[in-house]
Image (cartoon, rainbow, N blue to C red):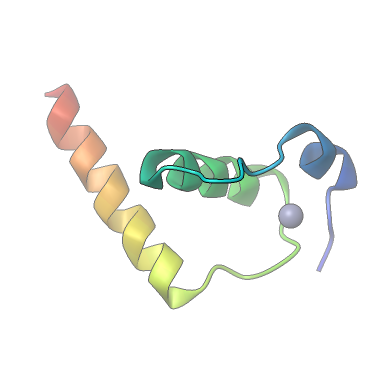
Length: 58
Ligand SMILES: [Zn+2]
């Protein structure tokens, strides 16, 4: 697993992240770094978050 230290330095998770902040963080994280695999729970949350986002737009 490769860790993108630079990205992590610049993108620290807020201390009390909202659901949305957490989801955005994971989306960005998965684009730039793969230091750990997503847990099933987070993948599930991401799916819901993305489909909700789509609905809100249209
Ligand atoms: Zn990482």
